[in-house]
Length: 136
Image (tube, rainbow, N blue to C red; front, side):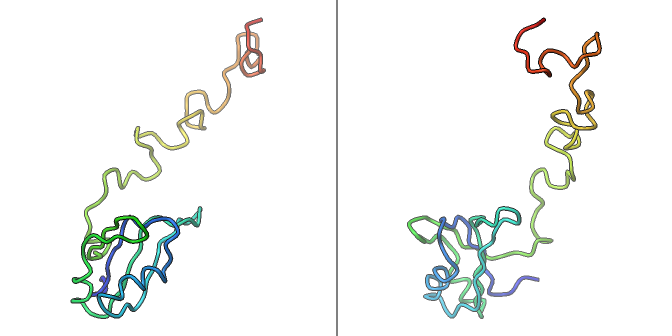
């Protein structure tokens, strides 16, 4: 269940810090915590975060558009993940947009080529596989 004073803030500019957000949103009331979300692999900011107020009314007062670091951002009530509508394409598992397993694209082990360059009739791997640019 979401904290009653939890806000989602989207569209954050690059370089904004948690201290910047805390300073900005403090005009709506005491800020308990600020969290900027980072990519798991890249460790780069994902452009959104959360601001936690102690009271529901303070969070409600902060809902709307805000100019933070010369970029317009949107603050809205945070909703628990299970309460949100699923995103388009969610639930595909390891399949791509075309519905095939991820490793079946681009010569993966489930592709028709089996991940190998098809052999030529004479048993060689073919001109392109050998780096030749013209036919023998």
